[in-house]
Length: 156
Image (cartoon, rainbow, N blue to C red; front, side, top):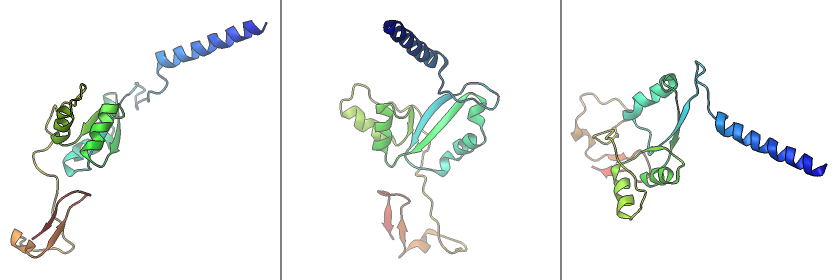
């Protein structure tokens, strides 16, 4: 009798695991009821250059084509690289230097850079007060502080 109960429990557990794998209970549903494929995206910094992506996420454009974006902000290209290499992220936005470091380190499963998102640094100069007819000469004697740790600090 006890063996029969054990067999039934084992069969039920195997059946439940098979259902979880076959039907992927973790998938999210889009607005129209379609299953969404989750893409885990790690970015090194929030940037105005990525504004179209942020809008597309918030407006549900990715969901319309069956994609659920899980966006995470990691402080540094090394952390983005580590997340992609470990499988914690599917794709990463970071400078190409991280790809070079990993490749030069001899990794078998190295990162690949497949697109250029930006051509310039995504930094902007802002001031507390409005400066009419601003020129770079207005910065002489001023200090410019970078937007994140390890970023540029200029004394002009």
